[in-house]
Length: 386
Ligand SMILES: Cc1ncc(C[n+]2csc(CCOP(=O)(O)OP(=O)(O)O)c2C)c(N)n1
Ligand code: SF4
Ligand SMILES: [Mg+2]
Picture (cartoon, rainbow, N blue to C red):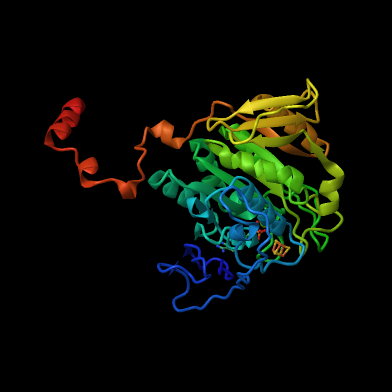
């Protein structure tokens, strides 16, 4: 995504043609006439690369070359999204990736180069995504944001998209700082944690996972960018979930928040990570074989036939109990522990379209006769309102 200047850009990036050229219709609503740069990946690849059910290789799910700092946690999340979409054999043109502003919000340019996308304004990803989703429910919505983008300026937008149950996978790449603007504490920075310059954060932290649980998100998880084994299936499961799926991914900023005293550094998260479960996603295409030890497995059936198999690490952990998840989270947070895994899933989830009883056809495919049902229908509606 060519958005390098904070605060003044809103780009509609519609992906690329297979030959790498921008598709006609690429719109820039940024600085008039400004030429933005990016690094395109070479298109050739080894003919022997493994292919998924659609015949696509990993390369078909990649985007441009990342311009983030080498070692940034966000790049690992990009890799996990690519892996999940490859494994699920998703048609790239069926995905809409929407983001705000920040290093994290730049990442949709580094995956799914043939998907639809909108790099919106700082903190406004959720409302743009909600609007797009209401207009066309046929796409898979991936909202990518940062802790500044979602817990600071965009906190209200985050809250409303979650409480409305928008059908989306909402990923926050959480490093506790505003990486793009050089490392100021964000609202998710823990009280008592120290900045790189040694300044202590005296404000209480917002825990987006706790808030998402309270607001009624039907899928809530936390993971770590350094744990691909946990993160990839979480993203796959969230994509297959119907409703608001929220994943908070601790993603260390190696430039500004990876020092001793930070609670979002690689070392701190590795030392304090408490995983409640490990997840396998079984799609209808594969035979369902569950061979885990009895008592340590929780199976969740989803609307689309997918089964989530949770291998419990904490044997007492029940991922269907919202209240218990909230208590569990708070108890461990008080001990400085970072709880990861699928923390809550509602097997009977639904979404905003079900709540509003909206028409199934995407709005741009409705015909005049659908939009104007005629005088007698109008008279009936008027009569019902008198
Ligand atoms: C309306 C507005 N206010 C402030 C900014 C400046 N700004 C750009 S990115 C950013 C914070 C990004 O932090 P985060 O979302 O955590 O992303 P990260 O860079 O850490 O991945 C800020 C404050 C802006 N672009 N627009
Ligand atoms: S400044 Fe931090 S968040 Fe931004 S690219 Fe560098 S390491 Fe990543
Ligand atoms: Mg951040």
